[in-house]
Amino acid sequence: MPHSLTTPDQVIQQLNWRYATKQFDPSRKISDATWAALEHSLVLSPSSFGLQPWKFFVVRNPALRQQLRKHAWSQAQVTDASHLVVLAIKKDVGNTEVDQFVERMATVRQVPTETLDGYSNMVKGFLAEPPYPITMDNWATRQVYVALGFLMYSAAMLGVDTCPMEGFEQDKFNELLQLPEQGYSAVVLCAVGYRADDDKYATLPKVRYATETVLGYYD
Image (cartoon, rainbow, N blue to C red; front, side):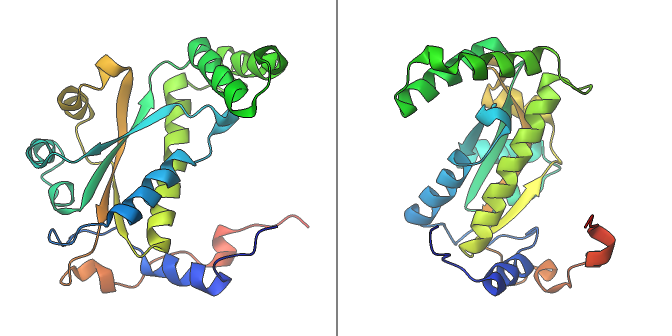
């Protein structure tokens, strides 16, 4: 088992430090090495069946970000943060995506594709008849939020601020980024950068329910 690089206290310290940053310092940019690590945290994010029904679009064009801001309640995070990530679902996930992933798995693990038939059939069966009422787009959305959590946690551990954002016009973002043509649809945004010194929200106490209210145990 690898030696832990952090202590329990350090994890709690960083989770207490993070907050949904409302004002970013537009003059502070994330270093290439730090950003590469954050991108990799998205790549390494877990998903149901490992299927990864998503794509993450990093908007670097300042003019495009100004356009997007108009369709995100004019929230400054869209333009002022060092980076803006649009997390999108793969639309209408089905057998094609399963076959593509099986091919990828066979290549990476260097096994014959036919040895993965059991896995393939299981996933296809789930997608065709989920054991609970859900559309495939809603199922994919659940997976995207796991990746969002991974990104935000990784950023906090690196001392980088984030702000997850659902307040945007999905249709306009899809149109401006031409996502439907690529088979994707925007679900949530994440602004990533460094807080401004005068962001009043940075010093507000966290409001969370007590542990005994949030957690239950069966011993």
